[in-house]
Image 1 (cartoon, rainbow, N blue to C red):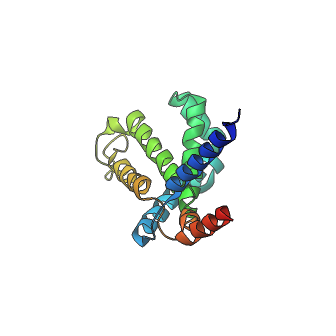
Image 2: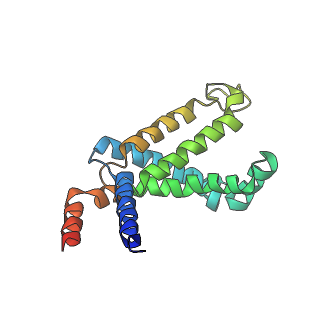
Image 3: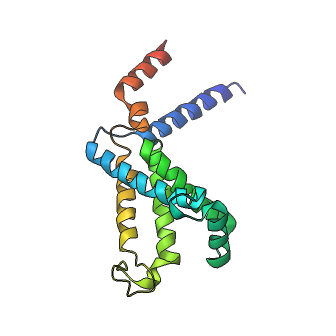
Length: 176
């Protein structure tokens, strides 16, 4: 019992360090541009599914299609909608960008595996195919992978929280 507080303090410190690694990013403008574009794309698609914006069917319609037509279990259908909508918002603001990018990445893997792989590699530019291929999805997965590796970049909440000035202030507060 005497060592329990020390163990709890160590776990808390490790948790803080892990969170800092999760949000750590640089001040790269190119990463920011990629994050913002990916965020807008996924927010728009997520808003179609969640809110019915931009010609979408809304939450109820999308859940019905995912569970009824595609036979996706309801929990996974909900996670797909949430990953697009909230992942898009997270990417736009640069808040937990690695987590948002991972959700987007997983979403695209499932989309390719369940729907788009049967139509081949190419998009349906000419309307000659019955559906869309997966080339676009590969681009989105590559962009997501880069953000998982690099973080949110400049002009992000993650960068604000992980900036050296913020860490210096926190270190001084902990020392005091």
